[in-house]
Length: 277
Length: 73
Image 1 (spheres, chains in turn green, cyan):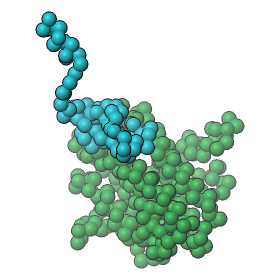
Image 2: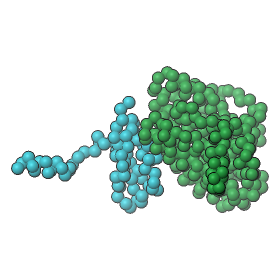
Image 3: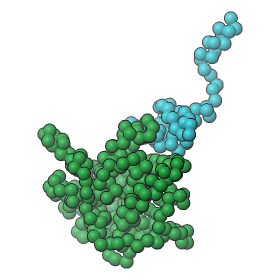
Image 4: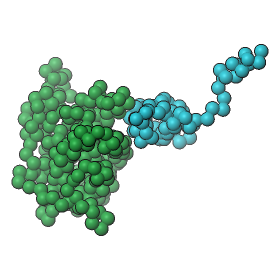
């Protein structure tokens, strides 16, 4: 693994992959922060209100930090259309709309949040000093988001059948999006290029394996997912249709935000008042 | 599920003594950890602990002494 102090010192092709990866993570973090924030007075108990509110602030802070690294790169893929065109955003479909109930939010916490952390952890353990230094604190803060998901998943699984069924439906919707993030096997993959360039400490297959190791135990066999255990590791047993999948945004298609969500994540309300970020 | 009361302790630097910073009500130790960390996140703590209130053994409580004194009189 190569090491360097600055992202500017990376070869141009790696910088482009890094810029795409950073923007995709930053977009997901920003919209995830919004989705957590929507529950700051609606969680099942007061302590959960306070906690989800804090988690929202962390996600928004992480998004800002990642955008800061993007600013160091001449390949920064952001453009002015991001304020008016939802299709330029790269967040996962699971974040397009507010979570309808706390159960769906817990699934997003368990799957999407952990997915982003698996990626950031690989860069925190990678060879780009400026990136690993900035991300180590992010990863330590995310540890508690992961614990939050574990505690709530276990609590909901001990609830009535209707809640477990709801967990199953939400997982069925979000799980394939998270697995698709890592891209198809056996083809040139930007996560592998980032690993070869020293940005990440592992490529796509290993990162997917880490994600599976982190998330599959949450389901406790009560929520069914298409995986099997082989040689002590979890493996996918379902095929993904890769038609329409974009390597830059690591998802199928583009976001379908409702108008209010898009106004919130782009700061349209603030700009209408003459306040600019 | 019944909630238990947890006392939260933390310190900002390793050389500092632990300070009591608040309380949390939670149904399990796991929830107490998560809730404490996210509720009392105003400082860059280097350590934080949650302790079930029932695990704390009272060795001194001033009003008890006063009450006892009053009884003895």
